[in-house]
Length: 198
Image (cartoon, rainbow, N blue to C red; front, side, top):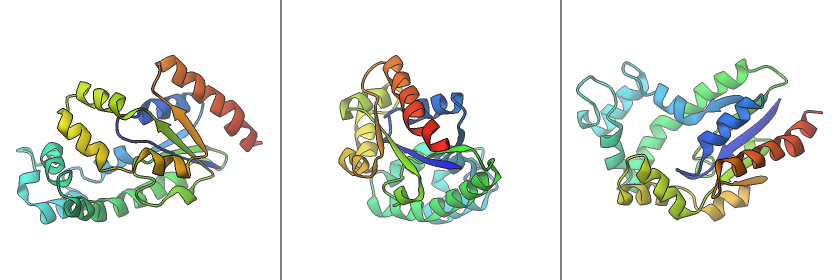
């Protein structure tokens, strides 16, 4: 099994790269998707978040009000650390179960937005960083409906580009067109993944 850690800042294009790698045959373990799963209504994860942050983080239907929680944790470093301490172990546990279920010869891509922040770079055969200019990322986030100040706060709360590059085996530049990004992914697969598979 070839284990690839995929990371990049919010708005960098990790989801696009994940999709392209799956199209080439990779098995994806998506930490963001798992983080949503472990906070579904009725889960111990959601109960723990409510116990820590109060009923104000719940929507009327009992689901997590992500915007309300984000307003708390992206403006308070201590609150974000408390949330991470609750959610990260649950995500790691579920991720480990998905990895164990993958075929032995799989190219396993772990999409981990906070790979650098959580010190996981050494867990992978290859670390791939998706990079894009900060202003490009801000514009993408605003285009998804975030306010500019919120977008900048979320970017500032993550590792810096320099910190990500320091652990990267490969950096994919997503400041250009979708076609240019797809060409880089294809080249990465041909030059790094296929030879590593033997």
